[in-house]
Image (cartoon, rainbow, N blue to C red):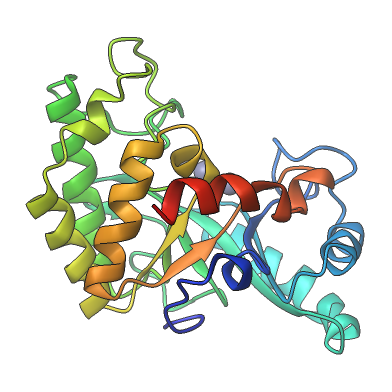
Length: 252
Ligand SMILES: [Zn+2]
Ligand SMILES: [Zn+2]
């Protein structure tokens, strides 16, 4: 399912924030990250579309159900001001294991994290080199994309979750290990299966060389990008603070 068609206009893209957490369901959410207040902040910032994407680690289907039942009735009050999706940040925690894998249940926006390597229960590759992590992450994303369960991949290609200074550094060896061919292939696969890519500030701003490659190759392929800040508090809802950086880095 596509949330929207491909948008390559940065001003337009930054009118959405498709990755937001609340304190009620995400332990990492700040106390101020209250559903209604997050919506109010989004409206105040002129956003047109937002998605709530609280964490669901491993296979906790009941939590997915609880999130939908709690928030779906509440968001109707805002229909005139902003489009609100009740999604979840689901987990692809190994190459062939992910939330909702066997469930006949879906959120309105299945945003899947494929690289929470800092989470204790996340599978790590046997080969813990940049090449090894790249292959593990690639296989995870390929299987997830083919599954038909995924609407969008959360913060793809972020290397800072890997707790190893040999990988998590300014040289970005993990993203450098991706060849243009490999990147083109996975972008094409996602396009075929209508899977979008979050254009995360954690990549664009922190790893601009790769961010630009991802964006330009995605444009060639026709990839759908979404904007998502991974907001855990009220100020995190705002996307316009990234506008200058995104234009400088991506429109090169
Ligand atoms: Zn995440
Ligand atoms: Zn998140």
